[in-house]
Image 1 (cartoon, one colour):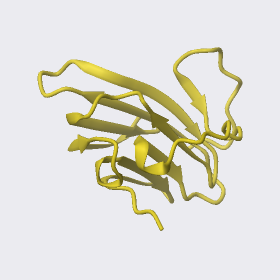
Image 2 (cartoon, helix red, strand yellow; image 1 turned 30 degrees about the vertical axis):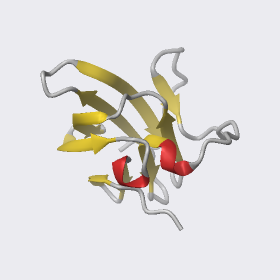
Image 3 (cartoon, one colour; image 1 turned 90 degrees about the vertical axis):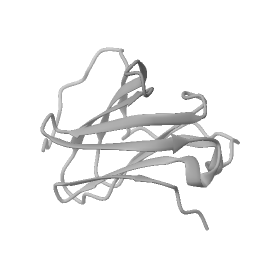
Image 4 (cartoon, helix red, strand yellow; image 1 turned 120 degrees about the horizontal axis):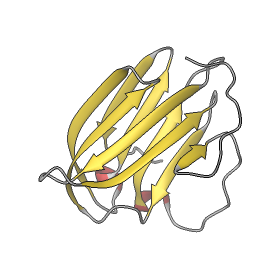
Length: 125
């Protein structure tokens, strides 16, 4: 866990502390949704999505500050994938997921209180 992190150069790194640009794409179009439930701690989260043959189709590092979220839209073609999430370079979760443009086909990675959760399906109200 990290309280503060030095500024990083441009790369595939996303600082989820910045307010996202308002997008008119509905939530059900998300392929990936990452969220922090932490109240005090920030986390480094790496997410890798690979096809069944092992080829990586998506990879990104997130710096999640307390209470922040980020999502990916239009980054992964619908299909079956192996998803790996690594929290702070240590704790790891792996799951085979069906990714598509429905709420059931959204990969959800949640962190908080030292816990890493990788599930399929984004509940919406």
